[in-house]
Image (cartoon, rainbow, N blue to C red; front, top):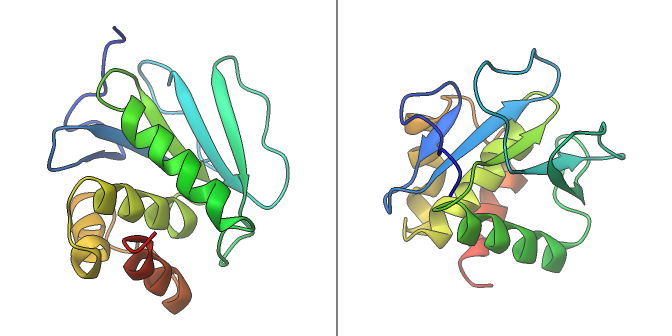
Length: 144
């Protein structure tokens, strides 16, 4: 089993179940500490190479995932792996797309969809989930 993220670590969101997922902005220096076992890159173009397992979800800045079914599948995989592995989600700035994905993970973890954005803003970053359509995406994520 991998050493998991520190509860109070930089950019780490603790979900109600105890799962921890790190959110990260790729424009900033890599955080100190352990490397992830899985990174979900939320980018409009191919991500930079990393030495660990990663997945790319095409998700242009300020928009929504290009493939909603692939997004759901990948976020469900990240949520399933989080109890035993160091999972992170990352976009350019670490707020909009990353915050939206973290809010979707919160929904998977049992946070009501209409409260998930507030949960992520309170526990990850106050400016997470940047656009009205990203907020709507989170609310609709619960319905599958």
